[in-house]
Image (cartoon, rainbow, N blue to C red; front, side, top):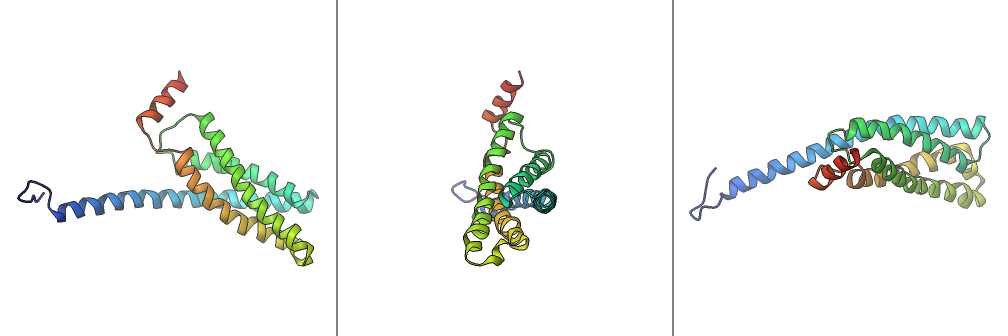
Length: 177
């Protein structure tokens, strides 16, 4: 590695290390985002199918149908994210991960339900077109899911499936005893 007269690494060497670190960091983040997207896509199909079945075939109201479909789809997504998307991350205890995962899913569900309620009940009281199954699907399964997914990716990455640190490894080891 080239060294300056003061014994410090040269600017080119420092830049090269920085570029390498950034490429590693964002490459890993990109792979995680891609896997998260695949798992989310599967869960999304489960969510939409169950939402429509619950609302049209079972006669459930839109908010109840969305809650049911989201809980089941979130369970599918948990398995995919834990064992594929973030399988390289240290386990910090299934109970901890599961609890945080479903807490953040509840927040994401709240975001989706808010979008659905605003559309169906708020806008629907003004324009009846917002009370249709198509409008409910757009509000819940596109707008709500998009906003909830952005929140959930950030929360899972930051709080649920955390990178291995000495404290996390120690907590997981203590929990297993």
